[in-house]
Length: 283
Image (cartoon, rainbow, N blue to C red):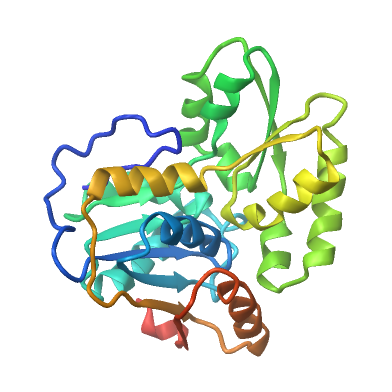
């Protein structure tokens, strides 16, 4: 079974969750198609610094946003199995695209709590009633039933403008920050005549949030990272490890990926281990 995390901290179907995480050595495993989930790990670490983390970046298959739904489901199941090999106490799908297709099937098969990501459209709608809200995400996230149901359950007076940003996640994985910014800046300018409210519906895009706020001071920007971290903390506390560790795995042999990950990780973690693994090690 799976508990699905929502950024605005609503009560969830988690009454079944066993009190596993109060023991010494609590560990949360999370995966994403690449760099994006590190933006979630940052929020988790700031909220829960005294536990172990296992992070898996599936760069071999990523980005997920352009892949067929069935492929993303199978990839997500394999990634989750890899995390479970470390005897994790809870898992987080730190990817909106993977969450949109894999969270429900995993709910039926897993016995540990699993959380996921969801575009932060509810807090954006609650704080901006009657306004148009632009949702920047992958095509897979925007077309899936989970996103459509989310929008349908919100305030009817708001309208939603989907903005597909195919290719942006890959630019970020490669550390092509200038190219990524020019791409996103053009997308933002394209919606300003309709709205100044933007939801970042991909964890990769959160790395450009400060740049958006600096370049477009009148734009309101929302993402689900902090809400997800706080929800996990509130649901699974108390969490504690005597000597917490953070292990990051990349299934890539590209030195560029290693360099980009190190450059990001050193900005918010005092210590971590980064290891390269072969794609066939994740089955």
